[in-house]
Image (cartoon, rainbow, N blue to C red; front, side, top):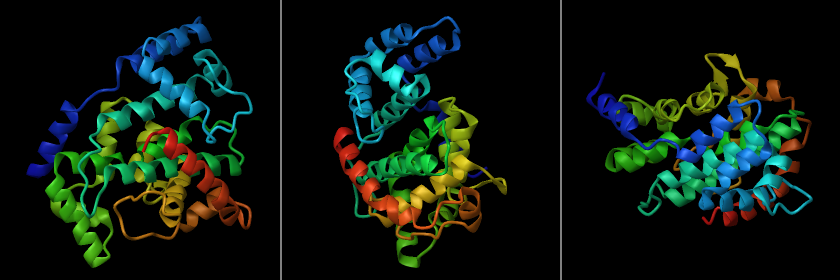
Length: 282
């Protein structure tokens, strides 16, 4: 294990955990006798979380026809899992410092890009006929969280990796391996384990660049793979990477999107993206 790997692993273990509200909500959800009121009471005890849930629930992302003016209504219309995922997404966004930016990496632009990927992921999940789209927005938002962790903890080294990729048209993970002996995808997977996130989301973080989990097709990973490329192509924020890859062939085969689906999506995605960025105050 390289010196960097040991340090990174230690940094991850010492990094912040998800807030108490998340743990309390998981306990409520695990109890078969819990009601919407029980979950709403937990969320209402954290005014910041409650406000963010109402903001996000009323965004174009969910396209709800009724105005969501209470936590009970948000849970009723969106479901326990989606509300829980909004809490995770907003909590993780709050864990990082967005102030320090550089020529190659700007945390605010990175979050804009990540929100774009979340929006696109949810859109394409619906396009492929998936009925349970709970995990797609969250997966899109945190798919590249390892980049932000490396930037916050090892800014000089991470910026050098970005510089190498920009100047040599290299894949970022190649440059990261050269400098850290690991990649942002592996670091992100360690963070997901730290936060006890489901394996399905951990797999997205680790494998989104290929769309395959250990050479096996995976619908959630494939959709985030495609969405990350679409977000870059539409200039949603800035991922820090200069190369826009082509979607993997197996992703096209797995998703079986109708002809023209990508072009048809662009207008709707752009509108949802612009509104959602405002809601997240970026």
